[in-house]
Image (cartoon, rainbow, N blue to C red; front, side, top):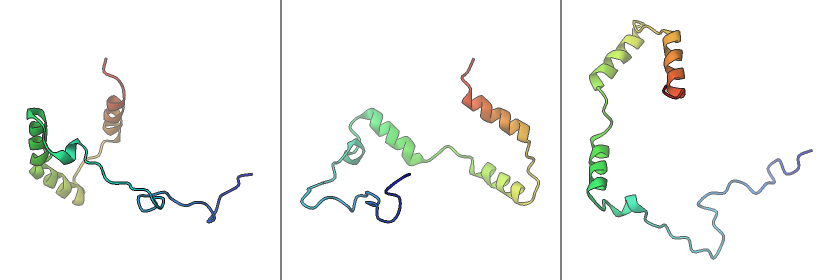
Length: 89
């Protein structure tokens, strides 16, 4: 039998349930301090540019799906998903 299941448990532990008297202060990590060099600056520049997405193509696919004109080939989707999971030969 499992004991301790129910509403009488200790509850979820979260940031708002620190013990009294504890002095937990947030620590600034590397991302919070800013760019430290050329690599970090390049990464921040790429992130600021957003994901490389063709918005026009996405809109066309959404329209085709909404109108029922987008062909769905379950076998092709399954093959691609399996190929992503298997190591390259």
